[in-house]
Image (cartoon, rainbow, N blue to C red; front, side):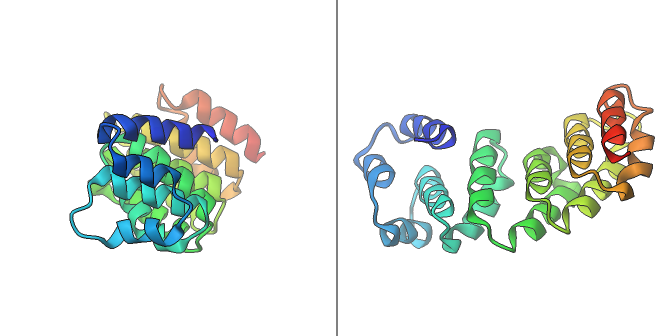
Length: 188
């Protein structure tokens, strides 16, 4: 069992109180049974998350919409699991969805995991979305410095020269300066 699956099952075990449905969803090999959970009425969030994670990791694109919703959830652990499953899913829509979530100024508080996913995906949408998000977060006293730092780190990983101006601007921010300097070195 990989680390992400173990983390998910441990967390959902507590959330589900170890119910029979939890045991069924974590052990079934029936993909159709998991897919049914995504559309069935009255399913608890933990059950939908479990089914979407397992389907996404198996490459079943029916999990895409649920995983995108979970990527933008207020609970960071749900976001981490969704990002992992979306990366494994390898759906061409993932980068566009992550870019939309990262650049949505109304959801900035929940943008860290979409930002990290964009860097991991290395898609054509990644660099423009990270630049746009970072530009917005360079305002003085912006409270979302962790998201800004995620953008800086991601741009450094991607190494695209288009990021140079925004990374140079990030040098003036104490919490971002060291990471921006490293990112600029990678670009050079």
